[in-house]
Length: 377
Image (cartoon, rainbow, N blue to C red; front, side):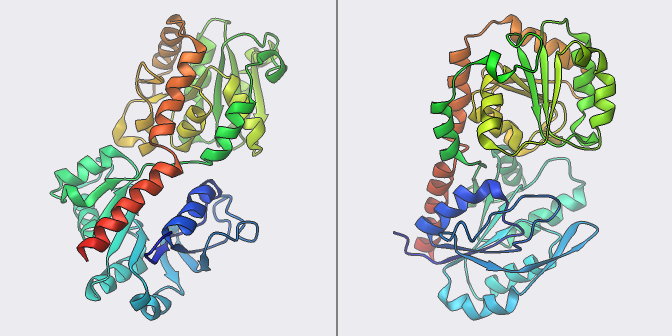
């Protein structure tokens, strides 16, 4: 049972963090202060159905979609300061209240943790220095990826005070689904003319930033020995359907639409052969690997999300040149030319999730960091 009392001041309560937050509340004594509303279309945790998560509502204030202030935080925090061991703050540098919280905690000698993307490596010199200064206000820093941790260390941040926390989805649910699912392409992909062909898959919002036009061009350049499944909805849907009209008529391309049923998503990912994400890849990478499907995306790490680190090129996926449909096409052809065993590929995909990108590993890291801070204090 936990001994410490931790307040985590964060922006939203994204649904994908339900399992992690439950474990953090139950085993680590964390109380979450956040805006409970569904903002920017991000599905949030239903706290009535999840009473094990300790939560306190705050109100976010935005300017041009950027979080700049969280109300109902400062005064309650001051009142709770003496009864709190650690304050965990999201690394939103543009949120003014975060600066005040960190400065206030430093003044009161209260340990703080900053949970953040960290440095990307493509920041302008001035922005990089401001971010580095912001992170130094915390007692220690948790970054989503190893690359960001290394960048902070290059900025002379004490390496003993910066840790990789990774990211995760509903891991326990995915484990249960893995055991229940079976390889049955004919049933799963009955909307294709030939369901047994290798299936390329994309899941996410169909927006310009995802660069699905590159995927469409690459697919049109491939021979006809592949199917393509696109799950999601968005502004680019009509454009993509026009690009892929011929293949759609041949029943080699299928637009599934928006889908939130994890059991159905699991079956589709489990039976697909390769997840292709031409733009930046984030949790889609973890989602796909969790169901044993290799992933490919572009190789400009400066512009990538930290979850790209789950891809081990040649092992559970590959990286291709950005903005190049030819590179995507060539990468897909080379990948399938290897004729790797499906069972072997699935075990490789599961491996990185089971070792790193799961709530149990995150809890272990949080617990270790909490203990190190409190022992020093």
